[in-house]
Every structure is written in structure tokens, then in C-alpha cells.
Length: 365
Image (cartoon, rainbow, N blue to C red; front, side):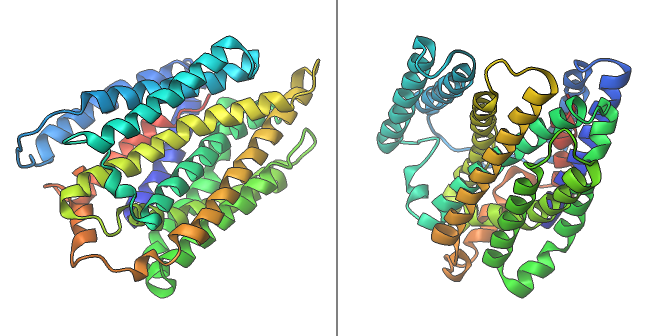
């Protein structure tokens, strides 16, 4: 988990810098094409190094997959559309209603499906459910951090795309360093204190960053808050991931790790949609240019801080103490080993895979 978190920090840094170089020298569109060779390399690596799992007879939960995909798409579209046409617009209301109905259908289907893609029994443990929700909120806040801080650096402080990518290095470097030490922190203080401290540090940094305006200095208003955010992310990710897998039976290990990743992606998609709507709503009517951008960024980052505050409350109320409830012997380790990155080939290949994945998904605008 520590290696996973550390390399994610490296990938973030490299992705932002490489994206900035491509945007400066080629086009912002080049960042999307960068995923093609990376994807090809990952396909080859998966074929070459990842061991095949035992084949089992089963049926694909097509209804569940469709309800989940279409429901989330409709919900995200409705929230994004609301920022443009308003919450009372027919297109917004239809999309959000459709999304809610489809997601309700997902829950109903999973309750009776023979082999559900999202076994509802995984939500029976409040601590594990809390970990999923915390991850969703945390990632929603972080995607807002990257998106809106990039806009602030380029649109307000006048940084080039490359300079904006380099400007994130304080956060990424600290994140990497802390993640390398997180095993010692967990061993000495435990998972819950580390998770609480990580989310709290991220919250403090985000609240500080949301105060930046047109006259702010990069070092004081951006770099120092980024250091706090980097410390928080380095501390939070490993215990957050472990809590999402705690106490899972071996048979459900794959589904549990899938839920961790699902709430990761769900938080990113919903978080950005919500924060974009918050930012747009905060701009006074008729405001244009730098002033409008400052208002939008400040409101969105304040919204990120609110998401983190809710996440912190959930950690204290639901997740705290999860490591004291010991599952059946070896269950947590089995859950980890069931993840694709722990298959034949070793954890170091998972680290390389995460590095490539992050490089391709963090291009600067």
C-alpha cells in the first residue's frame, strides 16, 4: 500500500509535467494520445506477467452493469448540465431523475441477482462502507484540487502549461516522501490516527488554498497549502484502501477491491461535476475575466474543503477502530492478494503499472 501511494505521487508529478510539455510544444490534445502507447504497454505487460485466475462458471450481471453505467452517466450529466442551464431546466431534471431511478434499479437488481457485480453484503460492515464513502468524498475533493488549481495557476497567475505542471511538484514530492514512510507511521500509531491526520491535513491545505486571489503569491497561497495536501494524501491513501478491504472473505475479495476502485472513479466523476456547478453558481452575474475565474476557483476549492470535512466526520463516526475488529485469519491478506496487481509477477509490477496509469491520466490542461 505504501509503494502504491508513493508511486501514485510520482505519476501525478510526471503526468502534470509531461502534459505541460506537450501542451506547450504540441497541443493540449496530445495528452490524450499519450494514453495510446501507455495502454498498449499495459496490455502487453498484463498478458506477459499477470497470472490467470481459476476459471469458474457464472453469469455476467448485465442488468446491474447497465444500471450502474447509465445511472452514473445520467446523474453526472444532470449535475454538469445544471451549471449551464439551471437546476429547474427540463434536461437537468430528466437526467437526474433518470440517474436516481437507474441507481435504485441497480440496488434492487443486486439484491436478487445470483452473481451480482456489487454484492450488497459488502456494505453490511459500517466501517467498510464508511471507507468507501470516505474514498469517494476524498477523491471528489482531490480532482477538484487538480482541475481548479490548474486553472488558477494559468488563468490568474499567468503560468504556462509547463510551469503549471511544475508548480504541483511541492505537493507531489511531499506525497511521495510521506507515502514511503507511512508503514512506520501505521506501525507506531495505527491506521485510524493516520487516516484522521491525513484527511485533516488535506482539509487544512484545501481551506488555505481556497483563500488565494488575484493578488496572491505562489509560495504563500499555493505552494505551502500544497505541502499540507501532499502530507495528507501520503498519510491517507494506504489506510483508506486497507479499510475498504478489511474483514472481507476470500470469495468476495475481488468484488471488494472492485468497489474500492469504483468509489475512487465515482468520487472523481461526481466530485468534479458538483464542484463545477458550485464554482459556476458563485460567479456574480456579468462578471468576466480574471475576477470571475478567481470567484469560481475559490468557491470550488471551498467546496472541496467541505467534502473533506464530511469525509473527516465519516472517518471518526464510521471507520475509526476498524483495525481492532480482526477478521478471520488471513482474510485481509487474501483480499489484497486477490487484486490483479498481486497476481503472479510480484507487487513491483503493480507499482510500475500504477506509475504508467497515473502518467497517462494527469495531463495538464
